[in-house]
Figure 1 (tube, rainbow, N blue to C red):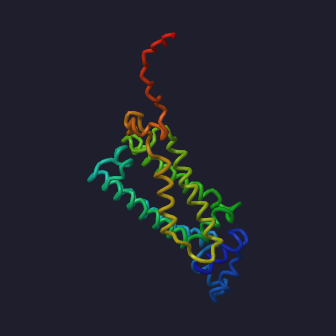
Figure 2 (cartoon, one colour; figure 1 turned 30 degrees about the horizontal axis):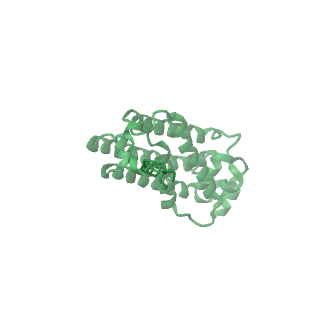
Figure 3 (cartoon, rainbow, N blue to C red; figure 1 turned 180 degrees about the vertical axis):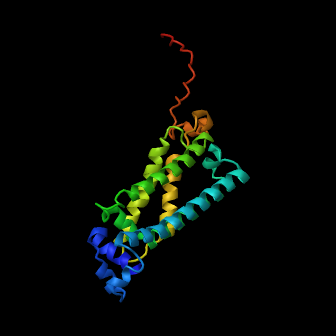
Amino acid sequence: MTAARAEFARKGLRGARIEDITAACGLSKGAFYLHFESKEALFAEVLTSLETRLNSLNTRRMEAVERHFREQGLPGPRDRRDFIERYQRFFQTEIDFDLESLELMWSHRDIVAVLVSGSQGTPFESLLWRMTDAQVERVARDFRRMQEAGAADSEMDARLFASFIVGAYVLLAQRMVHLQQKPDLTAWAHTLQRLCEGGTVPRFEPSAVARPSVRAQRPKTSTRRAPARAKTRHTPRKRP
């Protein structure tokens, strides 16, 4: 399977040859068919491993979010604005799962690359987009809950936001393929969450925003007029 992954990444699914896969791991072509009926069957086995881990991660993520909401309640608009402690814990939970997702992508970046650009004309051609559609629905569902609780901008399109997030992951997976060294995935996870955090904070009514004091509104240079001089009574001179 390791040899097959390398061959699929180099030549795509259609270009990969069974004899090259078996030669890379010291087996005969005939030995291959004792385990798999075709290279497509082998690729399906590789994908099953990725999908199993991805589904497990998503299940644990949803359970963690549900547990947080059940114990702490849904975050409100002021929770996000003031970044209170319980929202900080929720924020960190999201970062932790983002990091785990990025680690999974890094270890399977070759497979994602094949799905993106090396599976055309095969039964797996649309598999990546079916997988991403499922992720978009999950993210959109969670985002709508935040909107209903007033913790996310209600004017944003939930599915468009979810497509933006999932699309970013696909693009990052493609970028990983061309990297020689493993990037700082912790920094990536923090950046992703900070982008989501800063771009989805609900809008507050003007009355809810602290207004500057009258003193703070005054310009630095005074525009007040100088006090008028006191008028003096004019006494006409007496002529000699």
